Image 1: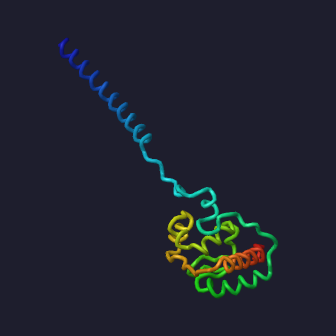
Image 2 (image 1 turned 30 degrees about the horizontal axis):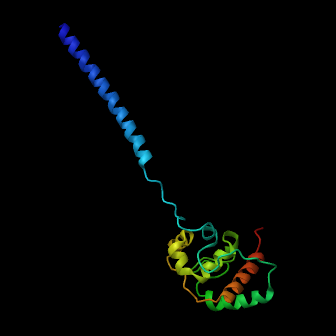
Image 3 (image 1 turned 60 degrees about the vertical axis):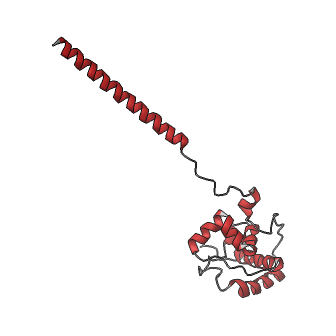
Length: 167
């Protein structure tokens, strides 16, 4: 009987140590997994600080914008109606997003790079990729000149400043 109790005590101790050991092993494995878990890749990796905020394209410096130029606004409105109106309106979602408030969320340089380099933006800029995923139709390259693009930007600036304020 004494040997039976001793054997039972040894067996219980072994089970207890194994259980503790396995929970420690599980804990170690869990910590190891967390430590070895790959971090989410940075969607902006490979972009310069300027490109992250201002987009990818021919506009590589911050614009020095002054008071709205009404001559450029008129040229921009005409260019917008000719080149952009098939897909965009100022205040209504169409094929593409409404553009009246685009300058509240995007830098002017980003907007110009999107107009001048839509393929490169959709391919390489995470924010443009998200927009493409939302609208499912890539922005067409209208082969805008830098002057046309600048005029459209001025038109959008004017539209943004003259938007109805919420009451």
